[in-house]
Structures are given as C-alpha cells and as structure tokens.
Image 1 (cartoon, rainbow, N blue to C red):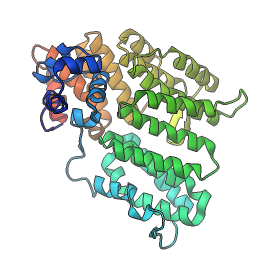
Image 2 (image 1 turned 135 degrees about the vertical axis):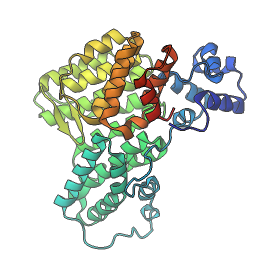
Image 3 (image 1 turned 180 degrees about the horizontal axis):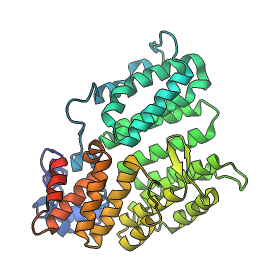
Image 4 (image 1 turned 45 degrees about the vertical axis):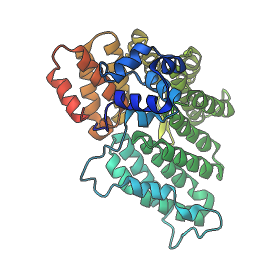
Amino acid sequence: MTHAGTIGSRLRAVRRDRGFTQEELAERSGLSRDLIAKLEQGQRSSARLTSLMKLANALDVELSKLVGKRDQLGTGRDGASVLDLRNALLSPSLLPGLDDGHDGEPTPLRDIAEAVDQACRSYWKGDFATLISRLPDLILEARLTHSIMGEAAVYPLAMAYDLAASVMVHLGREDLAAIGAERAIRVARSGTDELLWATLHATYAWVLLHQARLEEAERLAATMAQRIEPAFSAPHHHVAAWGNLVMTALAPTAAAGRDVAGYIHLAMAGAQRLGRRVALYNTSFGPAAVATQETHAYTVRREPEKALRAARRIQPGDLTGIAYGRHLLDVGQAHLDNRHLATATERLMEARSQSVVWFRHQTVARQLVESIRERETRPSAAIRSLASTLEI
C-alpha cells in the first residue's frame, strides 16, 4: 500500500509527539527497546500485529493510523464511494425530532432480502467495490421498508448495517464500523429474533479487536455466548449462533497472550454436536470453523506446529473466498515462523488469488511480505509480485 511514510517513521513521529523516549515506550508497551529502535531506523519494516497493537495502545493512537491503513479500492470502482456509505450511516435524518426523510413505497421484502443476500455474497468474494457502491441505497431502502413494515423488515436493515460495519473494518475506518455495528444491534433489538441480535455482537467485538481493545472484545463475545448458551436439545441454528460467538472471543484472547484452550474445547464440543457447517446470518459454524479459528489463535500465539496441525483438519471446499484467504494468511505466518519461506510465499500467492482488492487491505499480508523480503537474500519473483500488489 502507498502510505505517508513507513510504520517506523509514523511510530517515531507519534512517539516524539507524546514526549516518550524509546525506553519509556518500551516500558509502556511491554516490548523491547531494540524492536522499537529497529522499526524507527528502518532496519525492520514491520512487526507482528499483536506488537503493533501494544504500541498503538501505549501511544494512545488508533492502530489503523499507526500502520497507515487506507482505502485501497483503486480506480474505476463503478460508482463505489466510501463517503456515500459514511453519509448513509451518519444521516442527520436519524437524529431525534427530525424528519427521517422516508418517502415512497417500501421495497417488497422478498426483493430487499435478495439484495441483502447478494451483498453478503459480494462481501465474501472480496468484491468490495460492488458492495460499497450498493450499500448506501440498500441501507436507505431497508430503512424505508422498516419504517413502514416494522418487525418484518428488521433482518434486512440490521444486515445492511452489519455489512457496512464489516467492510469499513477492512478499509481501516473502525470508528464508522463501530457505528454501523451499533446500528445493526439496535435494529435487531427492536425485533424478536434474539439469535440475530446476539450474533451481530460478534461484528462489534471484531471492531473492538481491530481497535486493539482486546479485553472488551473478548468480554462482549463471551457475555453474549453465555447469554444464549443452548440447551442439549437446542436446534442446530441456535448452537451455530452460540459457537460463532465463542469463536469470536477466541481471537482477542489469543492476541492478549492468554490461554485459548478453554474456548477451543468448548467450541469443539459444539461443532462435534453439529457435525457439519451450519450457516446463519452471514456467518457459519462447524468443525471447519473451529479448525480455522484454532489455526489463527495458535498462529497469533507463535505456536506454528499447533497452528499447522489444526489447519490440516480443513478439507478442500470447507472455506471459500476471503474466509479462505484469511486462513491462508495464518497458514503462511505459521510456515514463516517455521522458516519455510517458499511455502509461506505460496500461501500468500494463493490468498491473493481469492480477491486482489481484499488482499490489498490486509495488514497481515503486508507484514508477511515485508518479513519474507527481509529474510530472503534475493527477493523471489513471487515476492516481488506480491510487493507490487501491495504497493510496497
């Protein structure tokens, strides 16, 4: 990605603005002064995401600002506008006492539900330009339909907000993502589907994770999972909603360096009960989902052998689109930790093939490419290609 300077230059500027020495920042963040010095001097071009989270928190700055994350949609977006989506989320018409601007006939529920389903497919394909171009109108249509039909139209409006939150995370707009996630939860709360309402908290927890608010992210997901904990006789979709929240709590726990075995065993029990993938509210849960999140957790904890062992439980076709791409980044990190540079590069190439636009927005992808470049005596053609995609 093209950034205003490097991570090292941004780190140095923020540190000096806060009035910290490198030693003071090291003490506040719990990291070594050597790492901070190497980043600032350009001897290292990046660090693991967990380390960057600690630096961002110690400096009281957003993680996305420290890593320089920005819109990487490129040109020719077929009308995609991040500002249009922002305006749909922050419409003044939503303020109490103002005209909400609702006018006209509501969209038939079948049509708006199909539009939401199409938007979900665009998201998982990593087709962010198409998604962002359609979401503003979809949100407005869903608002109108909800204002007239009430509870019957809760699902499409809540999901439109949730999709807006999810894509904003990828674009590094975590504050807007939090607003979208909160609006989704509030709309769902006005209905009677408790599982929808609970499931949407997973997106909010994911936003908190990207804001490096690890304890809050884990607590929110775990609290909601406990609230809807299913009885033994509960239907599969109830178990799936609960399991997805348990898995959401796993990521911030791993990032905080705490033991993850409890969440993994709990989720495994639920997944074994299902025995298959169960899709629900643009999420899914099952044995492959547990293996995916277990791979991620052990990768974050720098336990590559455990991560790769979990990854071997995933069968071809279990994951697709950007879900598979994100898993491949974890597998690539585990191979890099084992000094398997060629295999790590192969996994990165495969991840990029899932969606180039999505790949450009992945901070982890950038960190992996830069780490491999630092270790290779002579950068391979594949790494040069990946670096070009990321505009490093």
